[in-house]
Every structure is written in C-alpha cells, then in structure tokens.
Image: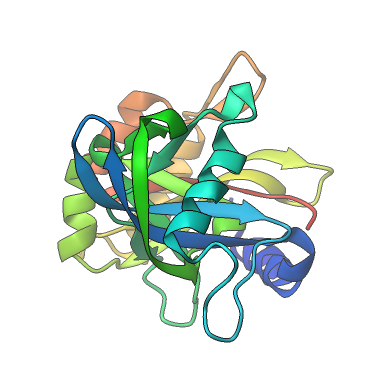
Length: 233
C-alpha cells in the first residue's frame, strides 16, 4: 500500500530535471480593480521559460511589465481568461525531518478569481521560485478549518495511497495523508489508511477515489488528504 520509496525517488528525479520541465515563480503584487477595491495577493506562473536572475528578478518584475504579462497570459486565450490570486500560500510539511518536500495550500474561501479587464492597474512587489512541490501537487485549495489547523499545529506523520497506476511503475495519481493529531501514531495512521484502501470507489472515469464520507471522518481526526500526481519527468 505505501509508495513512499517510489514516490520520493520519482520526486528526486523530477527535482533534478526541473530545468527540463520548467519552473514556477510566485509573484506578489497589489491588484487595484476598476470597482475601487484593492488587495495584495500571490500569483504562481509556471512554464518552461520561467526563471529569475541572481538578484531574484526577471523582465516582469516592474509594475508595467507585470501587468503586460497578465494581459499576455490571460486575455488572448478564451479558455484562460480568468486566473486565481491567493492571499497566502501555506507550506505544509509531511512531519518527517528527513523529508524536505512541501505542499502549497491556500484557503479556498479567500481565493480571488480575476479577469484582466477587471484590473485598473497592478503594483509589483516581489517574485520568488515556488517553495512547494508544484510539479507534483500544484496548489491545494482546502477548507478554512483545515487552514486553521495547518497554521497552529505541526504535522506528526504521513502515509500515501496509490489511486491510479501508470505503466506498472508504482506511479500515477495518489493521496498523501498528513496527520496533525499527536494522538495518532504512525502505526495507527497506517491502519487507518489500510482500512480506507478497502473502501475506495470507482468514478465514471474508471479512477479510484476516496468517498466524501471517509474524507470527513479523517478530517475530524485532523488527518488531511492532499492529492498529487507523478509521471515521467
């Protein structure tokens, strides 16, 4: 059931080949909207050509250039005319000191969905490479109650469960169970996930998924599920 070794081996390979798969830069900016409101938010941009120089800057790190980037990214393609801006990206560790990966999480109740035409102007504030494993987890939008636990409680341990396998490699779509409850040992967490693995359901796409009722039961125990995907890098 546990896929830790194959997961971290694949993650290591992905990280080593990051130059081949591009990068994610998280831009911080003030967004002033035409309706008179404004806010400071974070916008991750991924791509093969995303990079920062030795000073942590690129050609988009100014007020005008940042806004032009938004126009180029989100106004030409009809299917991508909206984009999400986050008030904060929380970094969640798995609870094991020898494992260095982080998952990026946001409060789904505080996500701003914008269109370029809604923006009056922007003020560029900062840019940095994503500190989370963007190529495996992306951004995880979670309930505010989970964010509160993440903010005030350190993680204890974790387990993983493969949901769909590709090419018999032990890779594919998986769920990472991170436990924030100090009363749940690694042995007990393993038991909970093993029990859950027998309750998976099959969706219309043929992929296994965790029933919502089981997710709620784990959340009540402060065991939270983060979904990832590992494929060829």
